[in-house]
Image (cartoon, rainbow, N blue to C red; front, side):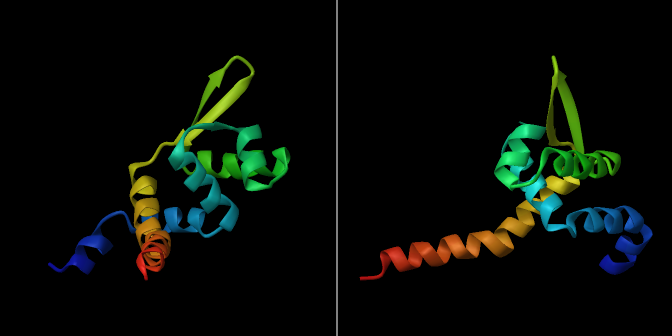
Length: 112
């Protein structure tokens, strides 16, 4: 059995659902921010430049997909990444798209 066969026999529907959730720039940024630390709706809305209403809608989609979870503290709900798969995909995306920019910056800084 090949790696592809293993993948196809595995949870391909779950993988496709995860990728659909990550296909939105807003949701991808939200998940990246939540990877850093848990945050409230208001905090997320501010750092992502979205209205609280829009942020709440995006968080509901992510929560329904099982990617984030909420923790209530009095009247405020704090969200965090729930899924190991999301964390692994975000780390991979960071290595592919962000780390190379950081490495290029390091090389530029080291140039005479």
